Each structure stands twice: as structure tokens, then as C-alpha cells.
Length: 419
Image (cartoon, rainbow, N blue to C red; front, side, top):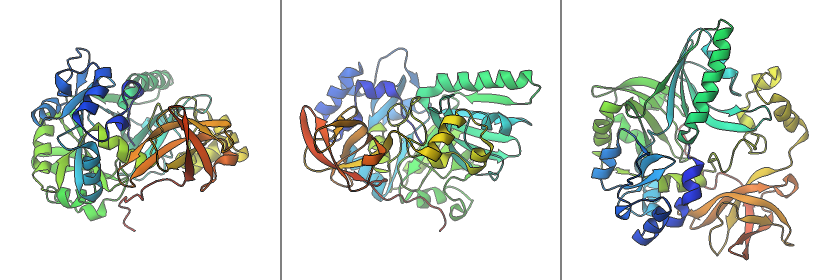
């Protein structure tokens, strides 16, 4: 899912430092008020995950990312780290994300009242990507809900929407409690509970040496609670890269030792925010605050599959009227993938034009693709122009460049589904 916030990207786009050289990194970080050549930030209001000291000791170039001190990269250039994830395995700290436990007799009804997910038919151990929606069908956040058992759920949502998500959950909780419903919430503190993402084709091989469970029976979007050494962990087979991989929730006091155990494998290297973003772009995954937001519906974003069949039939989710109407009659804009040829990458807010020069849309995410060796982007255009293979122009620094509308993901996904 994953999962970045608007604030950092308005300050400095990771794509601008894909070459990973020091001057580019420092240029980006100057916008972020980073100091000491970006080894760490001295922003007093920024929060730390339980692995902050670990990143500094391993020479991570730490930046203030949406109020969190996280590494943008390590010693390898971002493109090198990106390719290592595609061919081997990388370990990311995603402990800034909001982890929430929800339980009680009415917990399923509570979560369904806020999302488009079908939790009634979700099997225990199953996880569902879903969205919070507003009255107009706009997306308030994207999140993953795991069903731990009868009336027990585990929710992971975006760090950049932490305040808004907590307010949304708390307000709905108050409404349910007033109606005599039984729900309890627990927000896990990032210093008390870490979250690691092990991603790449060698991820399962590496993790299997550390666990007793058979990972060949843990499929994509399924979760299990188990142990690694003496550490209690939650392992969910998912990620934000398009590769096979796992997100591992672990107590903060155990996160450092767990990271160390994983990094003992020759196949694994530490990775930061830079490759995480270029990987998710190649995978055609949305970045909240950019590709999706409160003014974008799941139908416009090409995420109609997030609106579960039963929920469509019942029509009882927030924003259902607009979303169900769009499913029937269509939309005015549609998210598309764009492949550019020679020339610079098209960044966020770059105009999309017809071949005749009429402005018809805008880029929402874009940058170089280390895997494909050319720039790629996502954006929105009218549906009559959203045909794969069609040609458009994108405007970059006052000049126009040809682009081709392309099916996403840009790079084939390698999720482990057991098929």
C-alpha cells in the first residue's frame, strides 16, 4: 500500500535525486532544512521511529519526511538500491505508519462503516487493501485491514494521514458507543511498535531461515502472528514495490535485533525512501496526496476493485451514491500510465496536452524508471483519451515531449499468490 505524505514531496521530490550523488541529495535536503550534509535533521518537532539510531549508525541520509526522521538512501545510489530490490532483497523502515488494533463484538461493522471493504467474508488471517471515503466519494486514505479472528482486526494506514485517520476513527467510535456498540481501539506508538518491509525476489528465502512456519503457505495479502527468535512478530505478505515481500510488525525493543538478523543474509541491503518511491511508481501504485486524494474517487483512480461486490449491492458505505453512479455511467477523468521517450522526466503538476497542444490533464507522479531506463509517469486525462497506445504531449520546463499511454504496472508484479 504504502504510503507517503504530501508535505515532504512538496518540499523535495525524491525523483530529483535518483542519481544518488551528494550534490543532488544536498540540494533536495536544503529545502527540508536538513543539516550536516543530510546525515540527520535537527528539526526539533520531527518524530523518530524505533530504528532512528540504527539508521544513523548505518550512515543513512536521514531527512524530515512528513515530520518523521527517515533515511532517503544509504551508501548506494538510489537507482542501485532500486535495482537490488528488483533482483535480490531490501529492508525498509516503515515504522512511521499508523498501526491500530481494533476489537470488540461490533468491530467489523465499525470498520465497514468507514471503508468499502467486505470484512464479513474476509477469512481469518486475510488482509484487504481498502479506502476511507468521504460523503462525495473522495478518498480520505488508503489502508490495509487484517482480520486476526472473530471481531479482531489490525489496521495499517498512512503516516501522513495519522491525525486525520485517528480523528475519523475516534469520531465514528463515539457514534457507535452512543448506540451501545462494543468496539475498542489501540493506536500503537512508533517507538513501541516497529514495522519493517522486506521486499524482493529473495525475501522469502531470507525470511524462511528465521521462522518455523512454512512461507510457501503464506500467500499475498495474508498475515500470521509468529516468532522470530524470541521476538513476537506479525508477518503480512504484502508491500509497496510490486515484488514479493513481507511487512513485519514487531515490538520497538526488538526491532533493532530483528533488522540485524535479516541483514546477516548476503542478499539483503538497507534501503530508504528514494528507491521505495521509484519502485512503487514502476508498480503503478498510488501515492496518497498525489495520485489519490479527497477530491478523487476510486473509480477515477482506476481502483474500482476496492469497492467490494457485497458493499456495492448494499450501497451502505460513505460516498456510495457518487461512486455507484460513476460505476454505471462513467467518469470525467481517469488515471493513466505514461511512458516518455527521450527527454527529462515529467514531475508532479506537469501539464498533459493533446498532440494538437490542448491541455487536458496533469501529471500526479513521475520520474526515471531504473528498470526500464526511461521516464514514466501517472496522471489524469479525460476517459476518451485514456486508451493504451494513444499519444499525448507532456510539458516540462516550457517544452513539450511525446508520451504514450501505457498499461500499468509499468514493470510486471511478482506477488506470491500460490498460482
